[in-house]
Amino acid sequence: MLSRVAERVYWMARYVERAENTARMVKAFNLLTLDMPRTMQLSWRGLVSVTGYDAEFEARYQREDERNCVKFLLADDDNPGSVLSSLRAARENVRTTRDLVPSEAWEVINELYLYARDHIDQGITRRGRFEFLSEVIERCQMLTGLLAGSMSHDAAYEFIRLGRNLERADMTTRQVDIGAMRLLSDQDEPAAPYQGLLWASILRSMGGFQMYRLHVKRRINGPDAVRFLLQDTAFPRAVAHALAEVQSALERLPRNELSLRLVSQARRHALNADIDERIADGGLHDFLDALQQDVAELHTANQRTWFLFAEQAPDAA
Image (cartoon, rainbow, N blue to C red):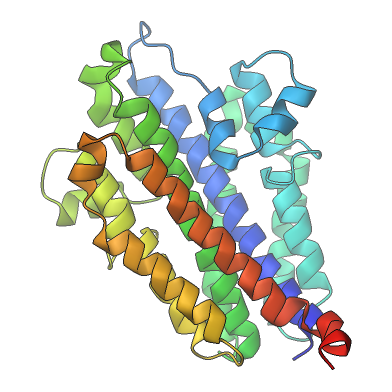
């Protein structure tokens, strides 16, 4: 399999997952603003911090209001993590690898991008935001299910699994990190009575609200929510489960030694952490930073092993 083709299907999966995750996050926060009392001021700016594109936002926008933040997250062409930018990139990667994926996959991603492009104004305004984001999320899930159900589970599909679950693990750590910084801090005492609602919003943004209630069986609270999103091995968007999927995909690919060692290390870090102790000593943020670094190092190893392999080969010889 050519390295450039492997890279394209890997990034296609990452971009689709990124678009879905961002849409989920904005949708959940939008619902939270309806549930919270008007006396509580919620900052849309925190969602920008989750994506890691603070510098890009600050360079383009003077005000940190709802409209600017939502526009940046959904529609901004200069934000490589916006829903529209992600879907455009995913569409291009599918277009250039159409011989590897089912023909229906091209139809779904093409129609999804065109829908998002033509209805993006609906997503920016409050009136049509819920419907727009729900449509984007459902079509992203349709594409993921279509690939899982009708594409041969060969090397190309393993790169798709690899990209999707690495992106998923990264986004989960980011959302938990921002949530923990804002909601587990004693500095924001007025928010304390509403921490259950706030953590419920984070769970909803990752589709985990119902599964949390089903398996944890306790009132929603910060430590249990963090533990569920990091360490639950059965929930697909939990870090431990996503990294297990990454490991499973890597085991079916050649020259996997370095990446396998890194993913085993990252998963061990996630599973072995004492969440209560981390929260008590204020070390949760540093732990999540280290976990994000594990994911970044794994991505770099994947690049060097498979995507830059052709360029490195002459030097190695």
